[in-house]
Image (tube, rainbow, N blue to C red; front, side, top):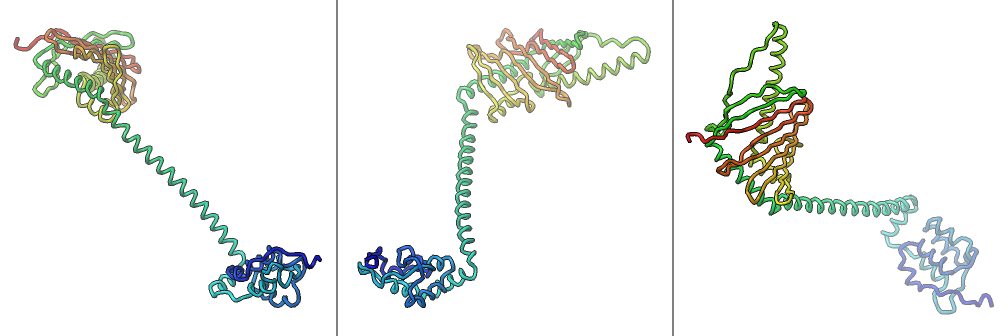
Length: 359
């Protein structure tokens, strides 16, 4: 009865013949239970040996120790002999070449599979890198489009245009005036004698200064003392030349420099009650900042606050500028206070006695 027990149905021989390699065919015999445990029957051994000799040891080992199955299954499917005959059928030339290569170098098959897996991993990695690059490009494009939007803030653009117009009109109006400029130095808490200059605009649009008052007194004492005093005086004069050069970079404000800061996206607008604070970064020097307070209702510049530096050591310098208005509505610089902390120097410059020339 046990011999009559039905075995699982096998695939038809023509389906088995469609498999590419004898290993696959023998493997199908094993998986479908064509043999019990033990060796194949003697009348199938020659056919089986052909399959084994053509396959590799891994597949032959799966067949070794298997016993014969029925000549034909009860359901009419192919017998073990038919299946083995199909498995032993000649392979196409291309499949034979592949089979010989696999028998000569069985590790190559594994290596090719490893390369395929590695290639798959590499493809995934390359895809991720490509996606990340696209994200960065999109982010950069978004940032590039954001900066011009910031620089082209309509309200900032409007207020900046109004400030530049006021400054240009004031400069033109001041060219018909002359005034007195008084400079007071305070070094290490010790005030120095003030100096005065008569100022007016020259043909080139630059302020020309003429000294007023008596010339400075000559130092008294012996020659050694006079030399020491002269040396200190020269050093202070050199430093004051730098101070004047620094003042000219910010006072009066330069519409062209403000426009450059605006175009570079380094200008901002901070409302303060009814007033407007326009902040310019990198205005005249890298790292500096100038804040201009503007009264839109009166169309006047009220003050400037500047944080900058001076000299090779880049000593920090703060500059406070207070504006005032003449009877005809002209806006002008009334006073500047420069504080150079490293030198313990405070320079206060006051402009007064404005008079129209030829009037």
